[in-house]
Length: 104
Image 1: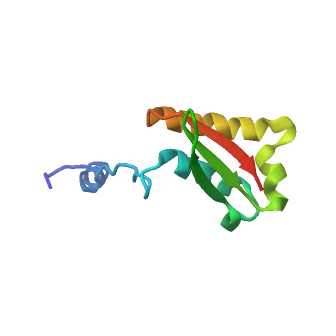
Image 2 (image 1 turned 180 degrees about the vertical axis):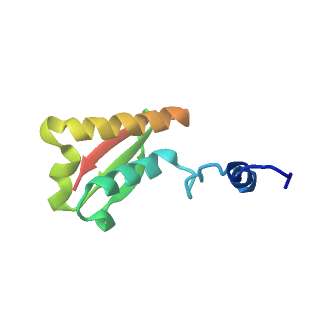
């Protein structure tokens, strides 16, 4: 270390830039749905996302505990609309089309 370096400069010299980890299974839409749902429900261990092929793209079925379905759908469907919007943005980033269905 050079003479006269400040404490901040010494700290910055020891830091490394770390990229955000990629999803474990490589499916960003799946990981996004699981993250969003688990962060808003009371029973996060009951969150499950199933995938099936559809005519226009992959259909993602989001399943939550029956007591949490109201939290995920929200008043007037606002939360469900928001979840779908964020998941579709993740799909667009992967250059795929995703359909999100929410059920218990």
